[in-house]
Image (tube, rainbow, N blue to C red; front, side):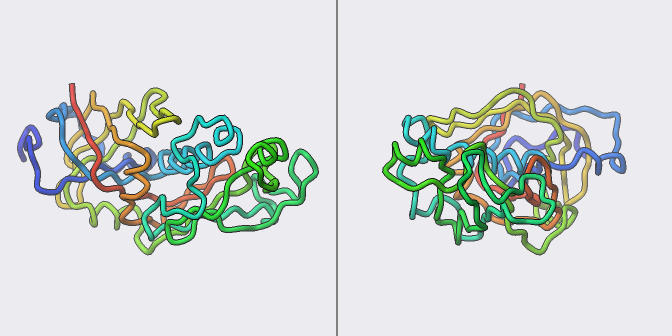
Length: 245
């Protein structure tokens, strides 16, 4: 096994995965990543949920009417890969963010937010709806049970699908510019070859733009995680930049 990954790869992948799965792959060798690789990213667990949260913030009424979002006028337009379907289910029994009414007393309803990659809904309260010349969507106080439709592969299946690349286990810092969509976060993780974890990697930055990341979604895993009213499996994203120290 080589002590460092190659400087350039024909097709590399970053996996951002579950820390809890790493106990089976412990290693004492730490190898810094060679700077500036163009990679595909597999985001899982809290990281995937963070991407959903970034989208929800971008199509939140407050950011839209203040024009502080990179997704202005995105309603009815393809923002994601055609693989993506995102639903809001406020009427789910015992859901973490369920509720028949929002904080203003507006009735909620189950609805599709993104269908085949196309944005079909915003998140609006009464005030932001008036400012935009639209109707409230029952989202005063936030979103309700956002669920990203899963694919067929589990987490290890996504690793095998990846083949070669980087498993990112830690993200540091606040790395999203909501006005431009630029995304950049410090990270650490494990280098992967042949769908298997080989050795740790540290002192790296994962970067891209959320517009490109959303459009670059190539697969969604069935390794579902639910936190803070959001549910998602791992997400495979093409063409991001990874830089090392």
